[in-house]
Amino acid sequence: MPPSHIPQSNLIDRLHYPLVAADLVQPDSAQPLQLGCVELDFEDLSAFEQVRDQYSGLGIKFAGAIALQPSNPAFLPRSGSVVLMPMTNGLSLSAYLYRTAQTVGAFVTGTKQVRLTAFNREGKVIAQSDTGARQYVQEQRQTVDPLPQRKLELTAGGIARVEFASDAPFTMDDFFCG
Image 1 (cartoon, helix red, strand yellow):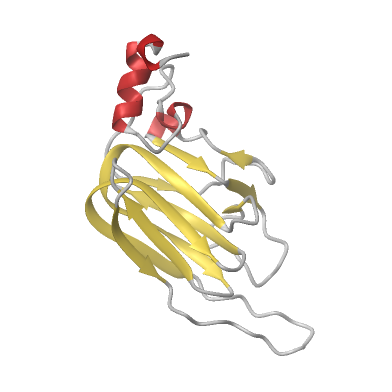
Image 2 (cartoon, helix red, strand yellow):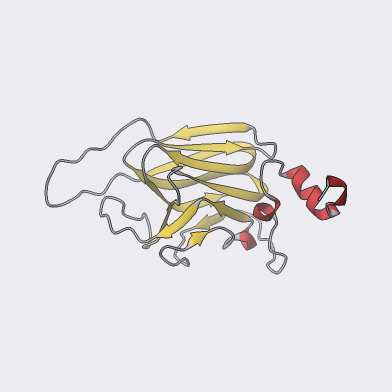
């Protein structure tokens, strides 16, 4: 359909979110949008559930994420039993915020560096952080020690999207924004 035939509401959404598909950022009209600080522990998700719009009522949508109950003792959850992990070989997952935030973060566990990048509404990088370049190698033995859980947090004005990424598998737990 040519752009002149796009319904006005979709055109406005695309102007505000030029790099994101409109269905990723439109809140569910049946759920009122809650504002303020949001903290997610993901315990309401089932194992192997694709995570996308389950938190749209809180103003957040995820992309590229799956909920897991880790069976590998190296990747223990920070709280509860459910974590998020990237769904594809791209080794990244994103969170889109309906309303911009100043602080966004989570606790991550990985064998290599995990990067957190924040973007504004125009898709411009506005802040970055990472867990450091450590690589964890464990000796061959019968028990596996849990990997360290690192808090990744960014503070910047106008955060509209964040991406967690790594060169190796990682888990994310206790996501927060506000």
